[in-house]
Image 1 (cartoon, helix red, strand yellow):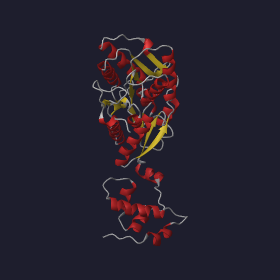
Image 2 (image 1 turned 90 degrees about the vertical axis):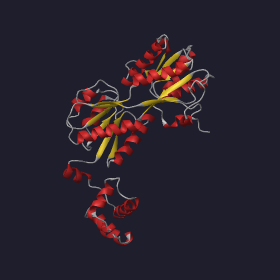
Image 3 (image 1 turned 60 degrees about the horizontal axis):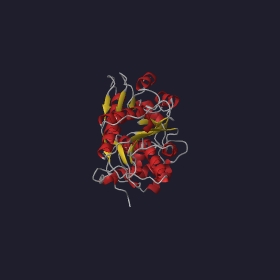
Image 4 (image 1 turned 180 degrees about the horizontal axis):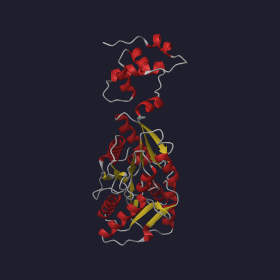
Length: 365
């Protein structure tokens, strides 16, 4: 059986300022094979907890730091991937980054987060600039560039695109069906007896791709229910956060907007709508039923808990990683286009017709 000498006895001997601690040094210190150390360093899942703890103790004691540059030169791989998105302050991106990070770690990869500010320059840099130079591949959730344009820019960097944009013949792309999800959300509101259904939170002026698709589904849902499609029921916001929605929905209500339901572009817009309503003595769902989009984690803690369109983020992350690793391994086929699932997570802001909600959306209290 492998035995390790006490950490305090040997650690100092490996801390030479003139030399780098190697995997073999750590293996000798822990009394295990270098392969075992390598598996721990790479995050390989099939290592026992006891062995991982033992090796990690030696890694910490010796101050081992992986030589990423040397490994990259030797193997042509960094075992690092990047996730490029607009703004980490947006709860949806934060939660998606969390899921992606866990999925990547399970496959032995580290995840670099790259904010793009939702601009063409930021997205261009992510796919061929700073991030692309130090990672094996990039998962990008662009707001400005299309998949076709990304494909032109990426060079030989493997890239997978998240979101429903114009399809490219070579770009891999994963999304939920935004149009269908919006249609289903409207149908839910119609089943509650709502007939003046508004849409809140999209951009003023040129629409982002998600906004355009969700508005398309919203309008389809109204037509399917035999309800008129009225531009007067649309409430755009100038600033794309919850405060922007407070201002926009509040101003619309003050101008006399009459709605009995709101489908919101995202959960931040829904949060803002709920606050604007509260400040004017209106409540969900009694006065106005509210549906958000993204099903962020805090939605169940609100009063009322939020009904929201919930993308299957685990399927999104796992599918994106699988496609990206395929490209990294040399797959050079046509662009693959995958749609993952979604569901309407029903909370108290727009409950079922009998007043009940989904178990995981019961308000905490």
